[in-house]
Length: 421
Ligand SMILES: *Cc1c(COP(=O)(O)O)cnc(C)c1O
Image 1 (cartoon, helix red, strand yellow):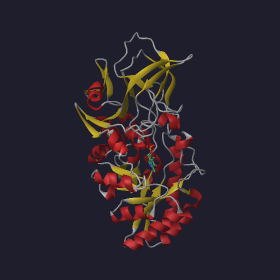
Image 2 (cartoon, helix red, strand yellow):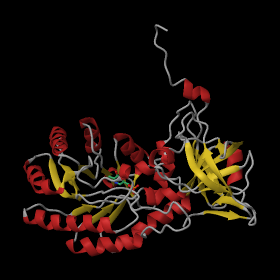
Image 3 (cartoon, protein in one colour):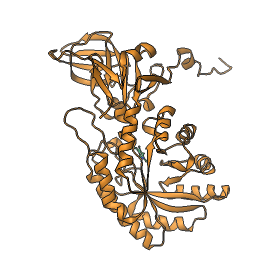
């Protein structure tokens, strides 16, 4: 459920009509709903009630300061994958001891920065990284709290570009090597292995892969404890999928996911961390665009929008589906026609949908992309010299620009000319 509903035939974000935002900031833009963000966070928090736990929002899904602040105020921790994300979370008021640092290629500089700031834990993805973390910690005179990210060799049954838990993926330490790497960690002076981490992929629409992975984590916990390691924290990653269509998809609920965690891992008495990103932000955001032209081609009609793949890359990158709807609701009797819905960028890949049934629309109409809150604005670029589009946050009947659109001059003047020119 989200808070983007038609009221009197006009699509609203909570209590704000989208045309009002479009008039204030121009198109295209992203808009997020505070109530939806908080609702999704609480679904996870409630699902783990009674277990010692921390829900660490995966910052990479949508990293605007205002979004982080909204979630942090509700008690969320954060999962970050770069120094930049760590600094964003800190700037949004999240204390270091509620931030976990994940990522497959942390540099010594990044490790130094987060360790000297008191990061909650580093999720280690390889033996060489383990050695570097220990060396940096010794240099700083601290002991780094770490988990090892194990790769359980489980098929997440999701899009190949976002599956991370198979042995052929670059992520984590093969679970068969885990004992040896934990033994190595125990010898190193700069690290203390306090737990296990696993993250098998994104947009998972079934619980079974989680169950397989978590059973392996439970087994490994017992084995490592028998080896003398004090395993007391389990980081279970993110990945729970969301419905991208309003019709038939019904991914598992956070409550069922929570019950699965309790069933597979509850008996171990560990502190539980989860790292959801998409499920918190995905359906809490829309991208709103304006129709520029309707073009009648040879046997195919096109809707040409003022938004493009640089603003929302998911369809081009992952063949992702977004529901695309007119902001002013079509009459119930209106007949739909198939269109290819495209942007103005000079790439055929700049296609949001092919042969999508749309009600009658005309140039100047506002068009909304649903489920665009996660991996939307964060992946945008200025390709074709199109300035980054603004982000807006709604709360009840208020809205605020939380990242403004840069001017053309700001965009161009970031380039500097060498003195020989
Ligand atoms: C991307 C990522 C997440 C978040 O995944 P979602 O599918 O957005 O929930 C969590 N943890 C790690 C390590 C990630 O790389």
